[in-house]
Length: 218
Image 1 (tube, rainbow, N blue to C red):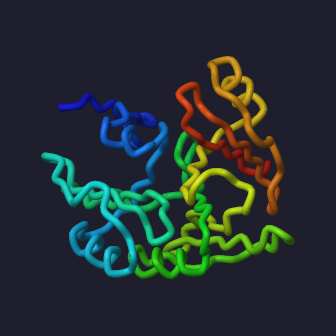
Image 2 (cartoon, rainbow, N blue to C red; image 1 turned 45 degrees about the vertical axis):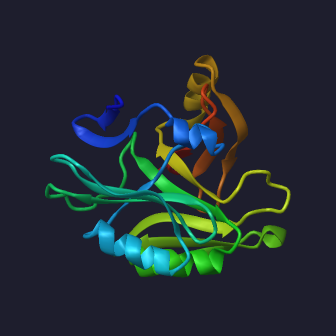
């Protein structure tokens, strides 16, 4: 019975927003984004996740004419959702402007986290970057499509393990101006990352963290 607003890029659905449920507020959850991972069978995926140390926040639930989903905490405590669509899905394509283009896991045990998601979602290691004292940044993908990366949460980071979602933009400096002009705040960056892309970490006016991602020129 709670209103749900869909976001689209053109006619392509890319996400949605809703009021933070009272149960989540009571548990101390702040406004936040949740990443959804596609799976052929939500119930089997949840069963497998629970056997690997996950916890259930929302048990497998039907969305009429849309699909079935569940929300979990992975073995390290990061929130993630799994979704099975009732409708045929288009083939995977590189993320376009306005799409979520990178999915980053900040966790207490990157090795165990990769094993968890690899078993559930079929993700593969696609490369890594040595960040010196911060450890290794492990990149992952699926069937040749890069999806994101994961690294160990710094001891001085106050946030619990979590996923950070990156949105692809055309011009990161102009996008930062839009963030600031509309009540958001930049918390880190913009900065260039290995490979020549640019990123910036932000928080929206309601307090939800998100990031922006500009591909390198050319």
